[in-house]
Amino acid sequence: MKINVIIIDKKGKDNLYAGLIEHYKKIAKPFAKVEVIEVFDKEIAKAQDISPEAAQKSYTKALEKYLDSGINIALDPSSKEVDSHEFANLLKDSVQVNLFIGGAYGFERDFLTKCNNSISFGKITLSHKLVKVVLMEQIFRGLTINHNHPYHK
Ligand SMILES: C[S@@+](CC[C@H](N)C(=O)[O-])C[C@H]1O[C@@H](n2cnc3c(N)ncnc32)[C@H](O)[C@@H]1O
Image (cartoon, helix red, strand yellow):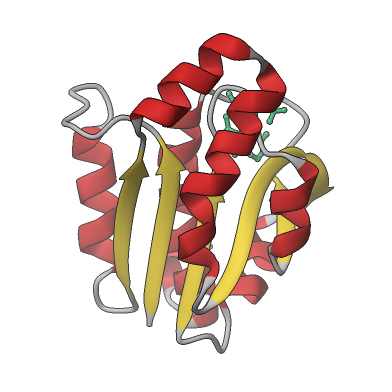
């Protein structure tokens, strides 16, 4: 199984969280290959200086090409809240799952409607970098739930 975490973020090592991301990638390996794909370009940088709407549009444009294969799930604080078991269920029986984390201005509705699902991890807004860590832990937890591995207990 392949799981892609696709995030609006500048490429490069993040000293604060990189160790945790690598840790979860490694321990998830028996169940799935988890890849983190950072997406950022000049158009996004420029649009973020113009308006929230322009920023959201630039995120859609940059992320659309990743929607082509697999199940697409956007992380969005105002969408349906899921618990760990519901999240695990979304990962079940798929060859490829793409999980999208938005930029500073979140997603435009148009992008959310193009995804198979949009989910929230609760009403609080987390920074996109912190969401990435939480998501990696939930991916591992979900995989262990689906494989009846004792970690999730
Ligand atoms: C800084 S937040 C964007 C906040 C923006 N005002 C919004 O409402 O989406 C950056 C990204 O982190 C993710 N995120 C933050 N908090 C979240 C939560 N509670 N549940 C799910 N995703 C979250 C979303 O993908 C969001 O687009």
